[in-house]
Image (cartoon, rainbow, N blue to C red):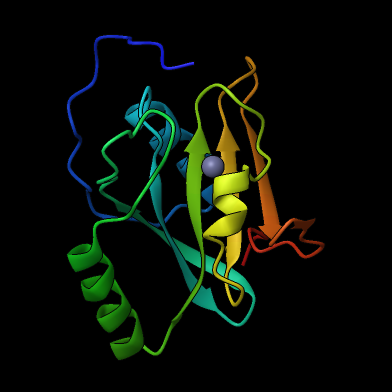
Length: 144
Ligand SMILES: [Zn+2]
């Protein structure tokens, strides 16, 4: 499971990502963070995503789990509120498993937020949006 690919150093969290195609941004962040799991917040208005905010994964076992840096989280929530936007959800990546919530993901799920999982397990990356363990029907990544 925990393959060591020699790129184990912790990446800095980086800036806000705003791309016309947020799906592509998520996939780029996931590859850049691999073999660790990437994580971050998805910010928008209503039910439409506008930005991604990549966060540091501070989990002691970042190859198989994620935990967002709490200080960074607090700062982002404050910034988002000051802009009158909302945190719609959070994302993380699975390096070797499908884009489905693990038992741990479900245990720690935040009910009010959507969970987006990016899987790099296959040659073609997979991005799926979840409301708990139920696939989310809406399209938060639609073009504005
Ligand atoms: Zn997961």
